[in-house]
Length: 356
Image (tube, rainbow, N blue to C red; front, side, top):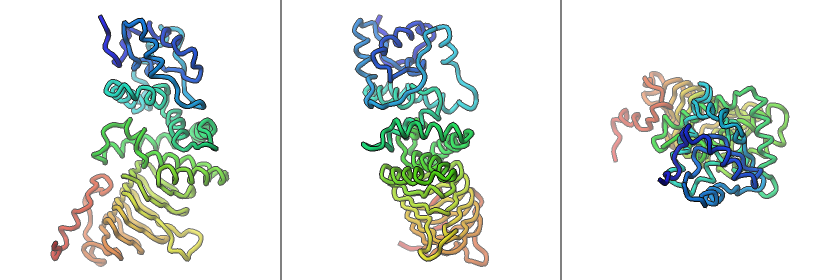
């Protein structure tokens, strides 16, 4: 009986894993984890090995991968068990990757090299960013080693924030269909993770490398974040195109920012000259926030606004120049965190003369 293609491998079939490992021996740069082997095509066809090699042949000559399949099938059984709680999200991402491979077998090579060969999220992230940001004179192998070292040496803080960022995108963006799609394809998420690495290098005095990464992120993702800027965790850059963040800007935790937002200086000040964004803030598309001003926790900035003065916590500022809904003396207070609700239009109800 023919086994269906691209279905998860059960423990009864784990004995085939050494066979898969031997199939890939001509390709020393591509090593499969048990989870990757779980998504390989299964068939009773004696020529199935050729199909496997066709789907999984590496594309990049300097592509880096992770752990190889254990030669002992008894030891590989535990690899299919859910990992520790710190790795639960990565386990789910790999499950989603297997499901995607079932639906689109043509993407097998992409998912295997990007997700399924990696036992941990940090290595997969370093690998994926290194490919996205590489070019003809900056090979992915060089970037992979650099990114891996930074992610290892920082004590796991970047990875912890990356997990919160993934959850933020999935919870707040209705267009996000899965964690694996965010990890692979959402340039806002990828730009933020690249910035975290650049910021770590900047903080260590490695400013030349940090600026190089900023430049490549700007070219690859159309997001320009100075490596000196400080960014918290749980960040959503929705669409992300055209986001600009200056050197001394600070962005708190659980902030949602839409496309074409500028956190810039006024053009005449030096030193600490960029905005400070509190926790839980929502910034609408096309907004400019200029100067060393404070946007309070839980505030909302309407799309297209130009903000030049401090905005109190839990208030809404709209317009050019921005004004507080309810007035400066007694502005209307928000009862929910706007970065979580992603509500961009509720303030319109307060404009009694609003007419189209």
